[in-house]
Length: 408
Ligand code: C6P
Image 1: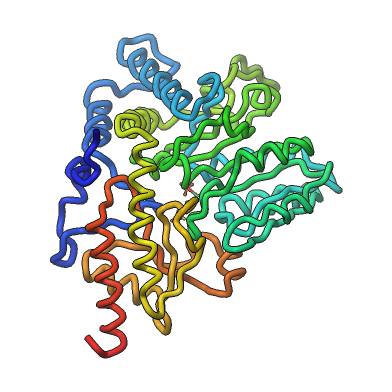
Image 2: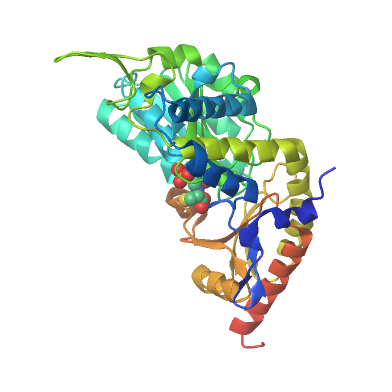
């Protein structure tokens, strides 16, 4: 049985004081902190194993290649992929979604449409805007009902011409968990490809691509205790087989002539150039750590934090909270504003009290516009946070209010 209250000890960065207060890190939706085992793994790789992959025959090159490919298998097992061929290493979610939209340009025709939602991150909007603009396809949005995705709206907008449905699993602003499995089943009835932005779900929930039956899943290593600069695009093997490479160069080729070239097999035909070897190995170590905690135990711990924090936030006078009103189906992401105060002032005041939160548009300007706001404060939690962190947040928000209202 894991004691989540003691987890903080595994994360050296959390054991420091910021502005004379012990740090409370509530910005994990932006990026998570890293446990010592991941930091050690990276340094071990550079100290003992560093070499390029798939090229050399010397011992280090073989060792680095074996560890890099073992990391791919680790990722495949973590998300329930049928084969490691379905796991492409990318820079992160953004690159992964861009690759899918790049593929979409070879599929979309004038008259076709792509469906996304108003709660998408810019990384799941702009690549589709570009793909639609360049092909003459239409970009359709699903809007919200009761702070959740309006599934009736999706039903109305799906047609035989819908070629892609690309949605976030968990909103990085509202915290709502979308019923992605049901959505995939519905979209498939119309023959659309289903793309899931898993940036905020894969780190927190047990995500099984075969169970969801999505065609693509994108996520980032740095939000799940791994290093920055590494991410994953999962794609079903049959689709990836027919999908042309996105980038060209070394590593991804089989044969190169003066005027033409042919590609390696999956997954390597997508990985041009020297990949982020240490990043993949660090990500695999992060997955081992998550597996050791257990994804369902993480989910349960975070649900307890949501149950604990949500009513306390709602009880603060003048605090406007965005996203679902009850804690069921809500991830540990809380965006809010304090009446009359600018979110940047609130975030700065919280920082003075040792609490790290994010303020701004959270790379979701269409959503914020839809909500009628320009920016918000966001507290986002992860496995290493505790009820004590929640108490400190509540106390600090109350102190901030009093300070700005002159009653401090
Ligand atoms: N959201 C946040 O503070 P990258 O930057 O490629 O690792 O992830 C992009 C991305 C895509 N989709 C969702 C739902 C996301 O939340 C993010 C990253 C961070 O909310 C940084 S803007």
